[in-house]
Amino acid sequence: MGHTIKEKEKLLNRVRRVRGQIEALERAIGQEKGCAEVLHLAVAARGAMNSLMAEIIEDHVRMHVVDPNRERNSERAKGAEELIEVVRAYLR
Image (tube, rainbow, N blue to C red; front, side, top):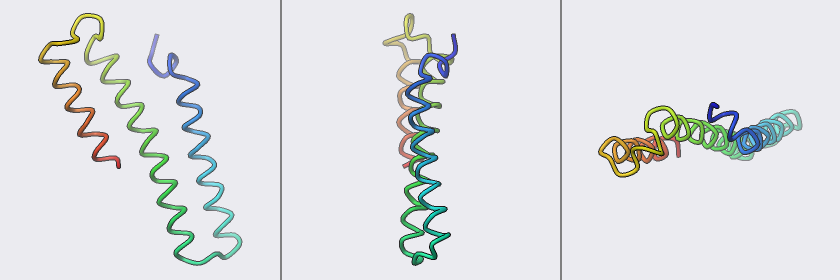
């Protein structure tokens, strides 16, 4: 079973959060809000999308690169955790 199926509800909640951010951005532009407000909403939407991407990448590494049942303390598992941390930092 793929990680997107296992974590379906959590991922769908993140997608809904992204949608809400995008809809707020669309409303602000439609209502001719100021540049600062529109930019804040765009940053929030980007943050929500980055969080979704980080979650999917993290789950992918844990489920498809490192077998969590076999390699908990291996060098490969440590490397995977380091990669996850780098991806999370990059996507902030």
